[in-house]
Image 1 (cartoon, rainbow, N blue to C red):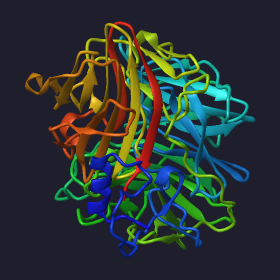
Image 2: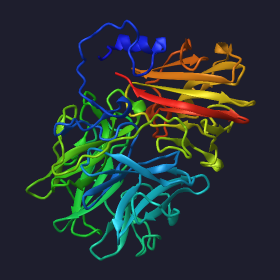
Image 3: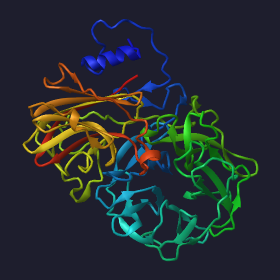
Amino acid sequence: MRMDRRDMLASIAGGAALSASPAGARAVAPARDPWRRGIEGQRIADLGDGRYRNPIVGGDHPDPTIVRDGADYYMTFSSFEALPGVMVWHSRDLVNWRPLGPALTANIGSVWACDIGKHDGRFFIYMPVLTEKRGFRIFVTTAARPEGPWSEPVDIGIDGCIDPGHVVGEDGHRYLFVNGIRKVRLSDDGSQAVGPVEPAYQPWHYPADWIVEDFAPEGPKLLKRGGYFYLVTAVGGTAGPPTGHMIIVARSRSVHGPWENCPYNPVVRTVSEDEPWWSRGHGTPVEGPAGDWWIVYHGYENGYRPLGRQALLEPVEWTADGWLRARGGDLSRPIPKPRGGVAGAAGMALSDDFRGSRLGPQWSFHHPGAAGLSRTRFDGAGMLLAAAGSGPGDSAPLTITAPDRDYAVEVSFDLSPGVEAGLTLFYNFRAFVGVGFDGKSIRTYTSGERQPWMDRIMPTRNVRVRMTNVRQVATFYTSLDEGRSWQLNDLRTDVTGYNHNTFGGFLALRPAIYASGAGSVRLRDFRYRALG
């Protein structure tokens, strides 16, 4: 039996198990649900009938970059302030994706749009990193297998550039194209820049009356087909108005140009704010398992910017005159899957009993600082999270990426003296909502600030807390008896504005656990459940 939304909310408020209906709930006809539901009720792309529905990877997975290696596909994304970062994902059908592991476990800075590929039998990832002292630098890491281990990142010696795109030219030399659109020659092993950063292509420009964020040519990706190099570029700005971002194409017989613009530009663009996906752009074309062609890019779900930019898949065609052009049509409808692929596992569990011996792949620290990943310890009863900072904003919280519109999370805290710990929805240090506990009282935070007028006495060091995000309204509950009964926190917060267009940073709103002050908190029995 499915609950309608009123029954669902009654269940949450009454403290019923996340997967159970409340006692006395009335029977209702099954609601029409266009999604298949996978692990913990998360929506999954594969509809099981030869079709899929976007996104192929839900939640905040921006700037997708993809490489094919025989029957296998590997993809990664910008990770920005998250550590571990640059998670590598695997698929054999371009629709069902599962994470293999992170390529980055050392804190080298904020990682922007990467490029993954394979050359001379080794996989590589070029990653632009915003460093604290030297601004943007481009690093490279390599591995014999996408599962890793990945090498220690090496600074290749390029200042002030982002969005690398690797290519081997007709002259046999390796090059990176970067934002601008500019290019630089690399050493034969790809570990160093050996030439200047120089202009490569003056991108096609949209009409002046189009409503966009900025010209901002970025995200160059290159492929070779039929004697041409194809250069795929994003313009229009990555956020801002829904109609801003877009993908354009040019081609040349040489990586050194001259470049001819595609007559069908832009090949991908959100034309109207009524479309299901906004700000579509930053694409990588890829050949499907049976030889058809596709493009992977990102976009914001209409009305759900706090989820971040999600990974989308659209079919493309090669025209008679040798250009690629997207042909997905209405992306609110199911699309036939790529032919010839093998469906595999999709997604990952977000719940965690913390009974393992290391941090699960669903977790990452936000802006972890010098401590990096050293703040966790497992004692058999749960995971001990060491305190950092003075409150939720500067505590380098432990976060997960929520892939669903509506969801609930729960976790239990055992507090040591001197620590404040809590559960939040966290965008960045200026934008978060949640509740915290210090063993004496419960504190409430919204708009990145503590609300002292809402403090109330709660003299306990053992508490379970629940958060729901339903229709982009965050609600918090506390329990002193391990979830048998719940107390509603009076403040509920509309979180629709917690996104890049308000606070910058290109991030997403994430469930997060923090520990600040001194000492540590033991985390037990974290649960995630999609709702609706």
